[in-house]
Length: 234
Image (cartoon, rainbow, N blue to C red; front, top):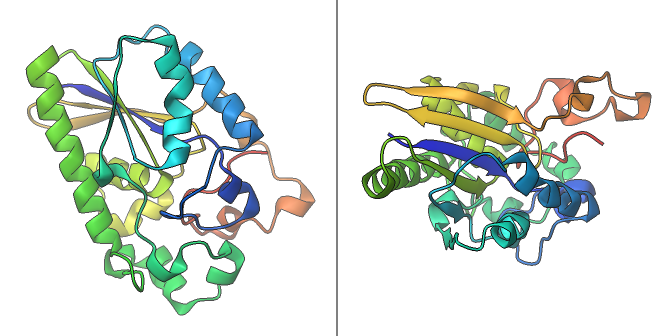
């Protein structure tokens, strides 16, 4: 079957402000995010793309704009099922504030039981994303052949949940996966199983350096997954 390239959107204003954006309108790429998006066509220059699919949210469509400009023959399609998790009442709130909510422990340790007030459950988020990928796999393979490659631009928690499904991981382990802004994750499906080809690849190893002293309070340094995906390396 087809190979899927998953791109997390570039760094957004919500990422740098430490806010859980969710489906809040008006969240755009920041300056660094625009730089990341501008570099994407070069990173993918040797990869033929049969289709490009996006979350409907602005930060994903802005991430893909330079790529589509470089490849005028490609049309952008959107799919709500790969849109951000519906965080409900948590949307638009500071992550530092949400860290004090009792639900955060469930989100971190037992996400398969987590449901956001006024929003959706994390299991429902994963289920819709997996359904979307399976439908697009079938469509792209049917229209372009089993060697075809296509791209989806989505969000941190969505991509992490798809990686967990591809690896056969229990969903409660998905917070162990991390994907940087504008990173590339690639999964190839076959008749019997998927293969993870890339995970959170930015081509930059700078994020592996030890954090500066004033960064040591970052959520991932406390052994927690960053809800929504985080801002990535400085």
